[in-house]
Length: 322
Image (cartoon, rainbow, N blue to C red; front, side, top):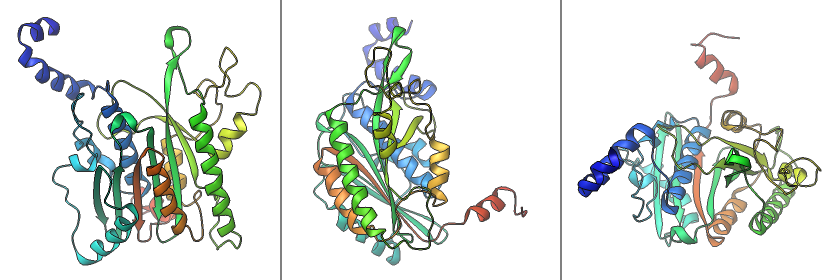
């Protein structure tokens, strides 16, 4: 019926598409929207890692399928960056790292009590030349950072019922860069501060489904979080990360253990993962490496002390102890 309506009234096609998106989510049929969805997810993840309300990303306005690329932050209405002196000073420090030569650039500062979260969406290339999304999250007070690289899983198998990512030369290059980053971090961590980590390495990969519809509301894209080391370990284990025909595949059906959005967020928030020690110089280098490597970047920096895990637990329980 809808086909008949839009055939007889071509001018209604866009209206019908918008109504369908409001009910069923945003369709992702173009590279522009695919990158926007990933950038939206990384922006929401950055807000969540900082303990901020991520519901604002529900207001992000997806570009038209055949439209121009636009940063997620630039589409959020009614949420201007704070312009007081201290916030501007902090934001300018990170802006200097990012530069102003990006083709698409948007920056915002969010504030909650004594905490400030600077987020920037940065990309220098058109959509068709951009390989993917990186999220770099920097906790200023800890001088700690986490790097998350997005990898898209495609439908495969009989009936296309499974989702998986097949490693390629691009992944090999990125894993090498991650190893170099972690070696540099390890040298800075030679005299560890009094800040225990389950894993002090920064590099993670988020394998997520290449869905044709973006999640509704402020939901994050479901996915598997694996450390760089875990990915390389799986690649050398017979029977793991292996598809039915013997090829390498990373998917829910081949990777037995991984972190989801909830677990990963909790570990970052509580300081169980991420670098420790002097990481600022490495962050600047990774921003440049992401942009020079044809990747889009979501950079976030949290300024100010977070609540401890115990304090957050008491808050969730309405102030009761235990």
